[in-house]
Image (cartoon, rainbow, N blue to C red):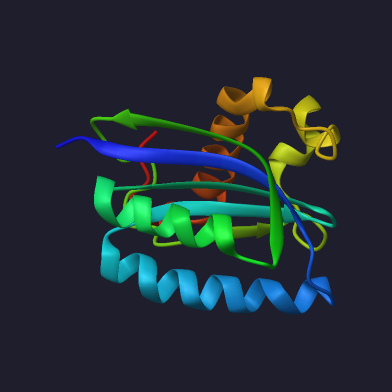
Length: 143
């Protein structure tokens, strides 16, 4: 089976910003699990970085919803296909860069989180996968 994937960076619009995250996570965990979508959201002050993957139709529907979501403004996105899932059973993992600590915070790319350009998309996908593996080892995440 072929899975589609999307990675994107966006900026939050709605305030107060921290109150938006629990809503995003709750709805994502519910709807993503029902639609067979998996992924990871990383956020830090004024930056969201998210990777989502799943079958073509539900993923396209989710992407349309994300593009219309008034809580953020998409800065860039990249899409593709792969033959395996990267995020196993993780309907929507998350990492709060403002409150949580991780080994990845030592990475050069983490220190540049307010600049993350699309040209770094591959490295940013690896960052999301590494954070997910660290925080959710029970989710059967593909190395």
